[in-house]
Length: 149
Length: 149
DNA sequence: TACGATTAAATCGTACACGATTTAAATAAA
DNA sequence: TTTATTTAAATCGTGTACGATTTAATCGTA
Image (cartoon, rainbow over all chains, first blue to last red; front, side, top):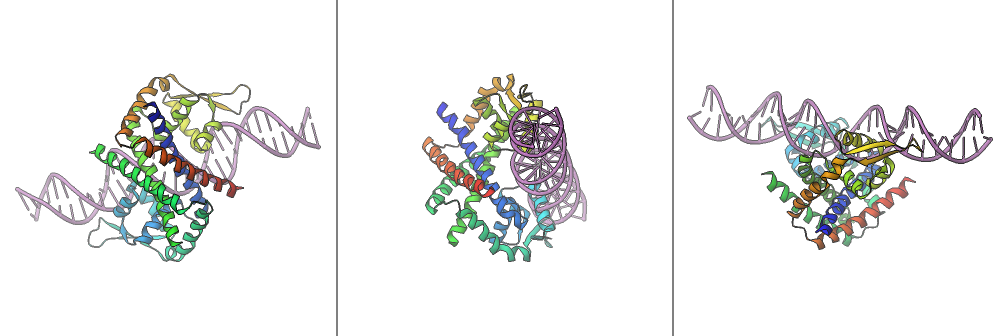
């Protein structure tokens, strides 16, 4: 029991620190492109599916408008994306990638991959960790949702 | 190779999201105590070893003074900790737990444990995930350090 | 048609988080 | 001893992140 409580502290700390470490690593790689880590995650999402609403994007990244709205505005100012209010439903705003985002996709992806490869994580390790992370993520999310109801 | 790059995106995303999920879960539990998640991590560190300098605390939590100074100030205002400038070396500031932090340790720890137990994570899963997270954390950190030199 | 409820974004206030700079104290060197 | 260097915190500017509120548009129903 006490053992279990001690583990709690260690796990939340491990996740917290690893997230911070990822943040620093990606920040150093992305800085030359004039991108932050969360902004890069937005690009990842849009490269996969372009032209989505704020709501969809927020759902994908698990971010509210309080975070997303100012972030997308900055990305628009920097020429990465474009906002377009829907004609059919003027409440909705679609986000589209700008040319710059398409042109630099290769270079950005390449630099990130190079940097990650320096860490010498093999694919097996990768997949195993991700499976367990997603598993934990699901359990945490399920609890959060049912508690909020 | 492309497989590998795709994994990169997925892993950094999984870590990002899991950290966010932890944040939300802990926030909901800690709110009634008037604590934030990072503030709780500070208490965890101080419950383990009280009376440390800002520098030591920053090293333990991997946080700079730009984050720590205002955070500790808030915790002082809320009666969790006390700052004391060292007599021997006036550059250093020691942080001590206040009575409130000692008194509420049990209640806080109990509530957190209760909430985590709802997630139904067994001890094996826990340890396995943590081992892998720490492993990744080390690799990321090593790279960051050597690159910074 | 009108009007209350719902929905999508934007806005606001608070709290991290980081790198860069500044301030002040201690230490080392000249 | 005076000065240069180093060190510990604090401060500053920018950018997330979140919950709560606000604004504006759409929808449902009488």
